[in-house]
Amino acid sequence: MLQFVLNTIFWTLAIYGLFEIIKNLIYLSTYTKLKADGIYIIIAVKNQENRIEGFLRSIIFKILYGREESLKNIIVADLESSDNTKEIAKKLSKDYEILKVTSWKDCKEIIDNVEEI
Image (tube, rainbow, N blue to C red; front, side, top):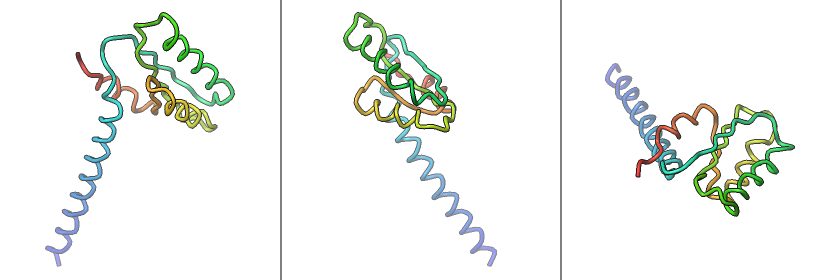
């Protein structure tokens, strides 16, 4: 009986570890495409669903069509909004490659994983 319990615990931890590895691989493949050769804008937002789309579009416009060549990416860090702020930003991130949306907690990890040239 003890052997069964130990095997169950072992395999449960092994499966959990596999899920964590897969989650980290997905995370790294998503956010390590950032390059270290430019200026990043990190925007912390909370409950700004009425303003976030216009604000982000104005910054994106300046980066893509203006003379702001040193600006490379915009990282929107959501501070656990209770409205649709994060969803609106995620919708825009599908249209614009330079826009990344994450939680505030994960923002530091993104910055730590910026690739060196």
